[in-house]
Image 1 (tube, one colour):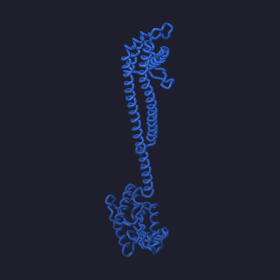
Image 2: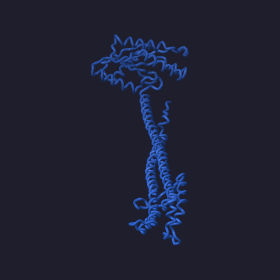
Image 3: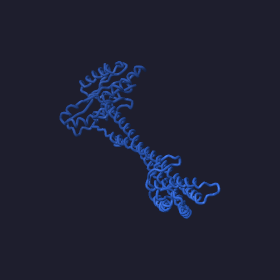
Length: 387
């Protein structure tokens, strides 16, 4: 019995799994893209604030010098206010880099910074260590800006270059970290995209193979529905469809031909004495002999049991039908039966021609059937033309 086994890649569980994986990979690619955009935005803010630290350091130094050594048109009070503003912003941002938290952005809005790590963290902590003494110098016992700012100015002038260098290093490291992080995220995104693409191709191939398997199975079932399962030649259904088409064309063209109905002689004793297996072997051998003896344009089929039929389009009695019937009788009678002692095999053939007997398939079958029984009654192994 035929059993259809679909390709594993096209099986339903695998296709469902492929669809799920495709959705998962697409989501990973989408989420990684959103994550990249968020990280780039955060990194841009951090890099911008790190660059601003250099400006705030310079601004604090300049304000301290103006507060302690005012020029002719300079206001010490304005310088003192600028010290508080610039240094407070500098210290707040540095602490946010170190510990994570909020800082004031360039537009005056609050922004959240995540604590830096690795080399950036070491730089920030060295900078806070340098700034800590300055913080103490810029606050009196009440936490306000002291009157005497000379010690703070001297300290910042002495260490300003180091602080600037650390802020430059911080900016560089943050930029490098951002590039590396973005590259890693892009790699994840590209990998997810490639996996999604491969998975999509697997899904498409699976669907194609499933479709082809279904088509092949359908074609196979259609062929089996038209094929005799024992002998492999056409069955009654296929013969009727083909014969109707050939007869319709012959009627339109006023063509001629013949229908040969064959019934085996001596088949029942073989089946009864030697079993169905021997009988099946005989039927398969008969089908092969009929196919070999018939013309290439003839339609050969098994109607059932030990009955066979041949439709011969464009055949003429004197030229084609008699020689064909003779070949068929000889082919069947000479089939090897050495393993079946005492058995003799032959065939009786009834012939109905058209247009003499009309173009109706049922009419031709009826006339050929009567002629076949005449041949069988005459001793078999012969053919008989329908009256």
